Amino acid sequence: MPVQVQISLSPEAAADDKAIRRISGTLAKLHPSDISGIRVIKRSVDARQRTIRINLTVEVFSGKETVVPFINPFVSKDVSREKEVIIVGAGPAGLFAALRLIELGIRPVIVERGKDVSARKKDIARISRDHIVNPDSNYCFGEGGAGTYSDGKLYTRSKKRGDNSRVLELLCFHGASDNILYEAHPHLGTDKLPGIIKGIKNSIVEAGGLFLLEKRVTDILIEGNSIKGVIVSGNEKLFSSHVILATGHSARDIYDILRMHEVKVELKPFAMGIRVEHPQELIDTIQYHGNARGNYLPAASYNLVKQVDGRGVYSFCMCPGGFIVPSATSQEEVVVNGMSPSGRNSPFANSGIVVEIKMEDVMKYRNHGEFSGLEFQKEIEKDAWINGGKTQSAPAQRLTDFVAGKLSSSLPKVSYSPGTTSSPMHDWLPPSISRRLREGLKLFGSAMKGFLTDEAVVLGVESRTSSPIRVPRNEETLEHISISGLYPCGEGSGYSGGIVSSAVDGMRAAEAVARQLSS
Image 1: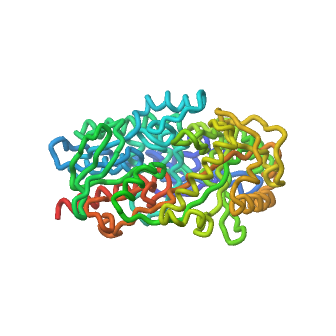
Image 2: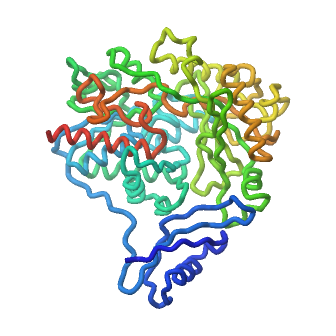
Image 3: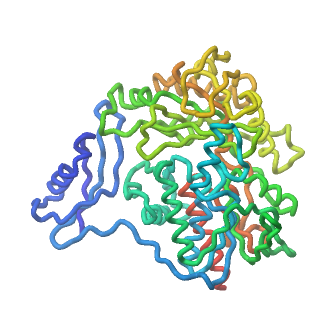
């Protein structure tokens, strides 16, 4: 059995494999000649003190022991002639549901409104260049879903809903670096994700699964209380007694279809706010106690949370060394989000700063019932479009001006390529959001000296942290509470947040389908 040891090294030493091997062997009380291999199983940066350390947990193998592979591979089966299950959406929940169905001997039929990862690039470029949003192909919609063009954060560690480690293994099998298996805060990077998505698609297609791209679901087929399939673009009917709904939090037309059929949905908590961008060098200096990052430390990040008048105000989707991107899914709205390449080498650091939204905030739309939160979300995104100049230019203020409640006379350079428009965001954002954000940012400035600076810019709006709607399901069978054969899952149905938790939920849905088919 390998010996497990914990070591704490300087950043420079932690980058030296020979040093790690030597120190690990000493702690394991092994002679260098007896060591057959080592493997890092945990790695984290400890920047709590001025002297920064890298903490490692290492397995040391000796004698005839060999280093055990990190991952269990994806074992494909030919499912081309097997029972078909429709999956609506090719994001993390949908793709991992498909992989799991194949492992269980079931044929997935994936229906995706958007284009493949390569074709999406052209539509994404048009958003920044021409301010034109294709409602079916953008940062949110298309093969791989919103996760394809994102930071690729894999921070979820909760075991409440399923096997996170299996998701990481499958990502590695399809091209991700194996460091995601041991880093404390792993991420894939927007430059790596398209290739990983292509690898997953190839596995599904080679096993006999079916991909139907550029096929928007326009209706669902229900008889009595049972799902019978879906209707897609061109009035084409696809039949199956089992449909996994994995559409993501921005597919608002799916909610409209559910409403038309009086399929029960629920209003759920969510959060909205702004995205703040600092120079990465400034964040590094703050987090590394005035030390330069150098060549051996990652771009520094932060995680901030405070309570203001009974609401949480917190950082969300922090992207060190990243970019702010336009994530609207319709023409007359502005939505901002963040992403980072794998090297996190942009000169900017950005993060969402958001406020919890409660029922009293959306009372203006109470006549919309369960959809009141969605209507609230839509109006703020429309306001951002108007205040951004009726283009994809984002309304913006210097951070200090936003907190002080005054219009910025000038704006520094930002990473958001469609551009910015100076706007009094403190004034037109709903008071319940604006006031708490401003107070929360003051508290952040006290907790993180240097954070509150006129070098930083706030852009609006960060509105799609999660779905404002939940599609309720039976937590034993995972079927919708009243529609047999309909399996809501992932972010769009209100059961996850991010790549890993969405993938886990998709796999659980696939397993639930398999149990029902075998009963």
